[in-house]
Length: 375
Image (cartoon, rainbow, N blue to C red):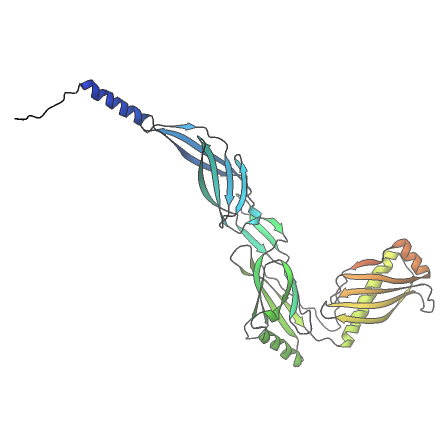
């Protein structure tokens, strides 16, 4: 009869095994991030601190020092906004949209292995102001124009309620809606990516309706008022920020001749001041033309001391200025006698900038007031 065989194991053997097991478990140590502190010192600066700890199998934790810390900022597309070592990060807040989210990633090194943690933050609240200046039309077909939005971006002060300018003249994205006032036609939508540039209405939908409205008004003897509503923003969202309107009027030759005479007189007075001439000047307009594409006048003039018969004391030159008298310049083509000497001694430049002249207002008309509402 077979009987089971039992092996007697001394109790000390169990004690040794248990000791080895506990020793093995007790030797295991985990390294972990115990906390990430991010402190803002304004919208443009962050101070970060990444805390590490050691944890044993028995659950005991104790803080430890890590190696070098790196800080990286990412935008919503995970493009890098900042990367550097240390605890200070520079935030390009002015380049971010209003309340745009971004990620702060802080990394340290534990036993040669990188360990990272992240926090999400948002940029400062911002608002955009526009003062749109639109020149339209630049051609006889009423297709082309140019714009300058004069952009100013403000952000709310850090830990304050006031607003401060963070950037002027920055690019914005958005679109115009162009339409003839009091018309029921759909507006022409003109997108833009910069704060200034040119546009061509004929490249966009519904432009034929706008041109029809313009030409119909002019044919009926009325001025055509084209309104431009400007929708813009620094981020993905755009909203109506400002409006401008241009009154299209077909000027007669007599009206343009009156404009030329007015601006030539004003420009020559400025030239005489620079030449320090107090004597009487006589100005003759030899010819003029208006460039509807550039919206500028070009005028060839003779400027005489006294009577025109004294041809030895005169300047022959070319004046240029916009339809509203802006950006006026004078180019000396030829000088004679005393006028030539005065020009050489007191000006001594081939072309001089006269500046902006006071806009011409035809008799019996009232200048149109253009409004730019606050957002």
